[in-house]
Structure formats: C-alpha cells, structure tokens
Picture 1: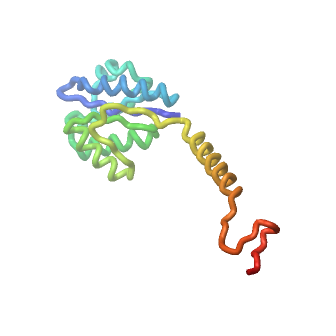
Picture 2: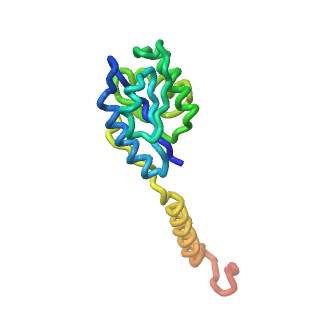
Length: 165
C-alpha cells in the first residue's frame, strides 16, 4: 500500500498554511498509490487535531517539551512517527523547520530526501512491460543477425567448408 505521512508544522498555536497544501498533495498521491493519508502532529493541541480532519489518521505526539520547535526533539519525534507508521512517502514542508528535520532524518535513517519539490508523481506502473519489449527486440535482432554468416576469404557456401586453393 502507498500510505503517505505529512508532518504538520505549527507556530504560536496555529497550523501553518503549507500543512494543508501538503495534505491536498498527499491525498492525490495516496489515491494514485492506493493508500491512506496520515498526519504527524508533534507537540500540538487537541484543537489542531480537529483542524486536520482531511487526513485519514492523525498521529499526535504530545509533550510539553515539544510545544516549541527544537530540531533535535522534533527530529526524534518525527523519526518515531515514520518508524511506527511505515509510510511509502513522507511530506515535510520546505521551511527552516522542515529543512532542519529533513537532513537529520535522511542521514539517521539512511533514506533519500528531495527538497524544493513542486510536484510529486508515483513511478510508472508499466516498467516491467518495457523490459519485456526490450527483450523481444533484442531477440528479434539476434534472430535477424543469425541469418547472415560471416564471410571470409576462402569460404565456400556449398557445404560450409573452406575451399582449398
């Protein structure tokens, strides 16, 4: 399944606008992959959980130390969310908070990261068909090449033996 996790950002008790933009993008991506959308809310309030109703699931890590952004604490919380949810994709905003977390998450978990993305598309599903077509083409070329035999000086076509000079 292609589950998508969105890490929500909030400042001064309000959710950032790009969190809702990422939710819309995640909804489209999860629809193409056949999965669900989850939101990871780190240090948010219960009122924020109600605002994130567009998600299928809201995963909240509530702790007084996470109320304000701290890169080390938020990165550890985001890592715990990713490990527990096991998503196919994680969306984090391209903000100073997101850039602090993304680099640390990629390095600590050994996963690739991509920044400054303007669009997200799932990989094409026809990949295996292309490989088969390529194999068929190669086989056709080989069959075609087998019709021709190398000709060298002294070669006789009758009986495929070398002619004696």
